[in-house]
Amino acid sequence: MAPKRAREAELARDELAAALRRAGIQFPAMDVRTPLGADEAGYALVQLGACSAPVARELAAVIARGAAR
Image (cartoon, rainbow, N blue to C red):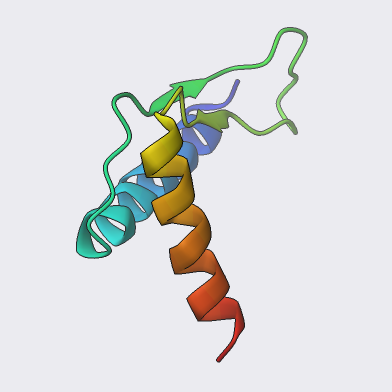
């Protein structure tokens, strides 16, 4: 995986985490993973990890409010 792709995924993870925090939502763990077999053209993946049912509902509500705009 090219370092540029990994850095791009890290920045995306950080932007998403900041946006979620502003909405009052925090995932217990967000990580960047390189998929098996990824080549230079592939992307690193932002893994959101697990969250509780109440956090999932909060996230769904925030997304629904944004989609309604």
